[in-house]
Amino acid sequence: MGELQKISILGCGWLGLPLAEQLVSAGYTVKGSTTSPGKLELLQAKNIQPFLINLQDENLEKQTLADFLDSDLLVLNIPPKLRSDGGESYLHQMHILLKALLDSPVNRLLFVSSTSVYQDLNRTVTEEDIHFTKEADSDNMLLKAEDMFTEREEWITTIVRFGGLVGGSRQPGKFLAGKKNLPNGDAPVNLIHLDDCIAILQRIIEEQEWGKTYNACADKHPMRKVFFTKAAESLGLTPPEFNDMEETHFKLISNKKLKDDLSYLFIHPDPMLFF
Image (cartoon, rainbow, N blue to C red; front, side, top):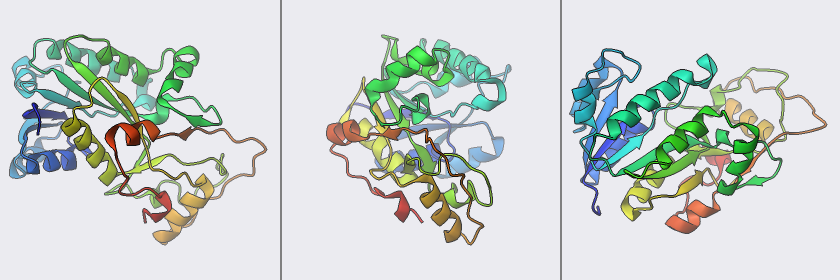
């Protein structure tokens, strides 16, 4: 297990809960947070130390957050809801967390991010291409959050930028079923299965790959119109309809750095076999 023994996972939802279960089975002491009181018993039943933490709650007790952060490693897994207020509330939550972290023993941080931080460059995109976002979209809330934690010297942060998340309860056939006049049908998809998300995060922890940034998505990138048509049909749903476009805007996310550093082979390398 290496030097890390106690792990806190902020956000035990679609990804955080099965990740917590996997880490418990690997022998780690795991604390898990939820914003739902009804989920506390579920976490407890899975041998995950449960914490009710909502960073948007003005009445959140500082001691509760301090007890949750009494760990070696924090897995930060709160997806920002950027459409509601442009990400302002998300950044506010991150500032609250940052302040609490400064008074905690956490010395490693695993930040779950997204490939949505990259610009559509109409080519293969690597981790180094984030500088285009910094130039064109300096107010990108997710990128600001990444920088907020990577720039600190009190801990070492590794960022994992996941592609589109599928698997488990997230069935891609439902995403676009029945919709019409959709753009970019010829664009490649950048997707990753839940099983690979869990395995990659565990591998980073076990191999102690800290101070890194990784793109994480499946090896293959079928066209949107091909993938989402098959995904809908696999569920017996009406397939989406895409417009014919003279110009396609896209990014094809490279996972080469992750595979090289971690010697990682994807469990689900081809999204066309997700169904």
